[in-house]
Length: 109
Image (cartoon, rainbow, N blue to C red; front, side, top):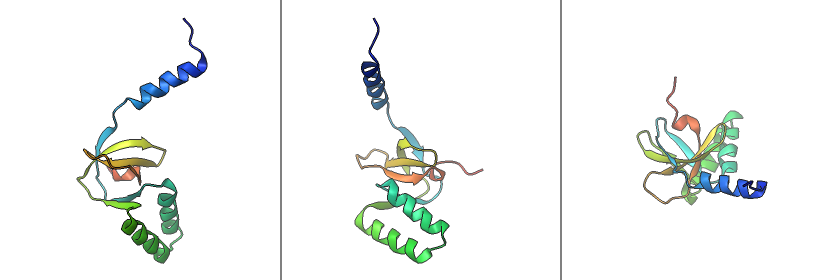
């Protein structure tokens, strides 16, 4: 029996959704934000040398709950990833994930 392409895509999507998130441990203190755009904006401010803008945006984002800090040793779930960011959630909690640089969970060389 041959599956139509949309049916095959739906089956593949369902299979990928059923996979458990990968367990990881924070190895480097970092911050993460629910919105990948906020995380990107924060890192662009760092790269531009705008410490004042970075500090102001990070403080406001931490206070609102949009962002959080990760500490080394924290257990997390890797929900999703891009080339440079992973969406991490605290292990054992139902919290939404936070987009965080993958360097937070990658062992430095």
